[in-house]
Image (cartoon, rainbow, N blue to C red):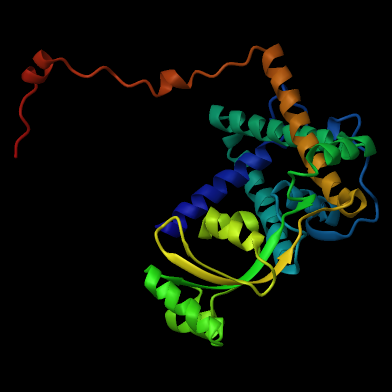
Length: 317
């Protein structure tokens, strides 16, 4: 039953897709070949598949791949897409022979499919024409250099620590470290924190994460400590106690513009493309007075009155 359902859905997709290219396509939307600005494809394209005189070229295969949002075709994916094209061609021809293209549903879906292809072509056109200037990058860098994670590297701390449930346990651990025992070995024995198995060792943790995981008092003590210095016991925000030894500090820095320029260009281009599409759509919707009436579709009927409920017959048990 499951395989039949999948086949039915696939068949519908295949038929709808190719009806869009049939001679009975609604005249409101012209076929792609009628676009004046569409340059002819290269004459030396590799043929991937064919049915009689009909051919699927490598360029057309790339169009299908990009339309479906997939990665560059692998040999296996190429074979599947070639089979998909063959299935569409053959089944759509059978649909025309059976005059299935004349139903209102088929006409609507075929027209919608063609318009969807045009819409995607327009989106691609807008994306290709979006521009980001050097000044745009410079302005964004100056405005966000202290807040953007792409530009600003936050300060980091490295330390080893022992977390205990009581103040007395933390004080005892601190005394044993002062007497020469290794903090990492003691962490394996005494710490109740999840990193005890690796000796309570924390490397290059950003200060914001230290504050979140260990508390403000713990962070302040580490920031004030020198390398190798012991701190604690310090009570955490969730009522544990920490003893720690600072092992490293990495100061935050702002990356120079040249180091992040291409990364920022990619980010800004993506934002510019999306905002250009949204602005174009918003303007078109306003111009054409587009409206949605979804509330009517999902409007719930009013609940029955007490009198109406009394008139309802009881359901048999």
